[in-house]
Image (cartoon, rainbow, N blue to C red; front, top):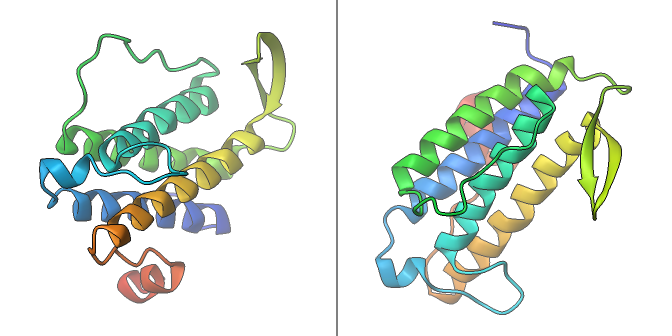
Amino acid sequence: MQPETALTVLFRHHLWANLRLLEHCAKLTAEQLEARIAGSYGSIYETLQHITISERSYFSRISTGQPYAHPEDAPPMSMAEMAEALRQTGEGLIDWAPSVQAEDAVEVNWRGTPRQVPKSILLTQVINHATEHREQIKAILTELGIEPPDLQSWVYFNETDQ
């Protein structure tokens, strides 16, 4: 196991927050999982799927340089399948993030044009993307009258003694 760095702590929190939210949402009814509000990506369930598939894509680009090919006809993932996928990509990001150098780049199809994108931008996108969508899910939970989980780094710190 490699030593802790600022990046590994950041990505450990990211994994913890994803799994904590998913665990919280796994207790919801099917009707509650389909709840949505204006300004969000979609329903709670759709947003969780989106977070999971997007993270697979980001991690694939960072680790292999290739896009993740999510089958278009794939059935929706169960909560357990999403948890396993997020655990795999989250742990992969914890391992990979410290080794990414500023000059490391990957080719991305940028609106129809191939473009070299720094892997550091992909790492930034992993964090920003999931944080934005976790907050959307928390807002939907609040609208439903359900207390959302506290995903702040302070709580992570208290729970994990970082």
